[in-house]
Image (cartoon, rainbow, N blue to C red; front, side, top):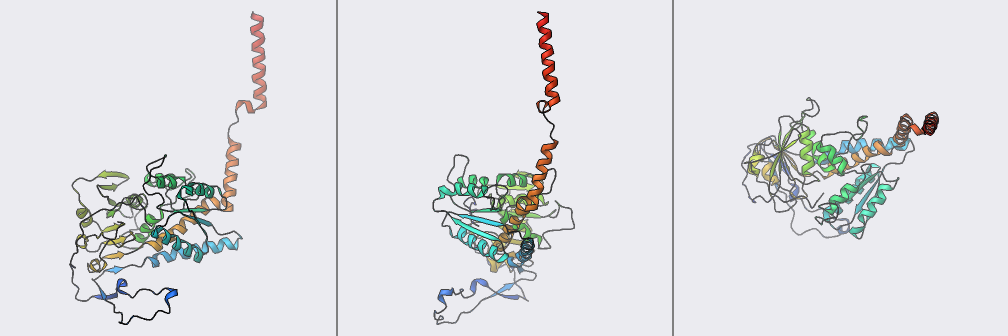
Length: 420
């Protein structure tokens, strides 16, 4: 998902020769060299005159390339089971509304992925295209107030860095306008604030409603959790990544900043690299790094996440150490795939989109059970009524107290009159 706040970290663009040679390579067909997929309307096009050849991709010992779809599938299977259970109880599946008000290719592609995934998994999805961006806020508030709507996603960018009366960016203002009861992206102020304070529930002190987390950042966390060398689930909550060093080349509010906070909340030391600064997220605190460079950060990291939204950027492969996990969250490939897969033990995840969509659906289901499920709504109404009954009545709400006050006032007035 492309966002205008993601800044480009303009490292020098180097073409590094492969550092490692492998005497017993594993051969994998390079996806970049496959013939282009034929579109349905082109099925009658004659084949090219020259045969298409593929170039084998050499993998170093222990190196692997992970398909995000395999990680997303269990989550989607669980969601389908939840939808089937709702239908068996004669409850309509949740309704997700998407608001699209731009022609950005990445936003349109994300909207298409969302619609296809929701349809496949039994979730109701409605895309509302808005011709004039100035009308987005009204459409957003209408969706917030619609009891039929259980989740809302706004496809950014809309205004980019255009300022608003209420903040630095109009897009930021829109993110905070989404109701926390419908925010499937977890980007409104309440969820962001809870994330940065490591507050994991929205209904303290009951703690029955878990917070929603930003879905793109959450997708990276779920990918890392699936990789044994990244997460140690034998440790207590909050320490699963203790002893790990992570570098994230991106500090946007969509991906980089929340991801850094989430990994730091799990015990990691996280270097956050932006165009003009490097910060270290550690133990719930942010530290300005003096003397560190992108190269020194990457070289000491066992996990590297790249999110630079430009086609020309390449992370130098020479910086990647053996046994490092590299995750690309940008819409462009920020690394040279053929080079890093020749580094022993490297785990490479080229795309996170499928997991992001799965996390979007997962967030929708969490919102539905937190706020919109008929049983939850009944429970919330009951609690509200009980709290109202248990509130101490004001003195003027009790007839006896009203009578006592009136009588005391009358007696005091008579005494004052007689004394005169």
